[in-house]
Length: 96
Image (cartoon, rainbow, N blue to C red; front, side, top):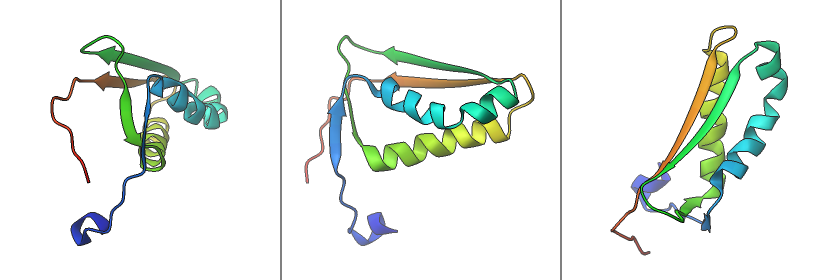
């Protein structure tokens, strides 16, 4: 809704290691993961070397949290949860 109203302000930061951030969120769910014997795989693919991720970390955390939570909730016993982080080289840049 804030985006439609033009009130959305992104507080973005840049990192070369977003998987470290994602791993911290996965650790929050370790009890459920072990209890359901789910295998979690975090895979990173880059289209170029030294890829960096620029993101609003508050919203990124919420999105990853929801993806992992749903992946566990709707997964079968002894299933696999695969998180693919693919970074593409973006030729366009956006400024506010």
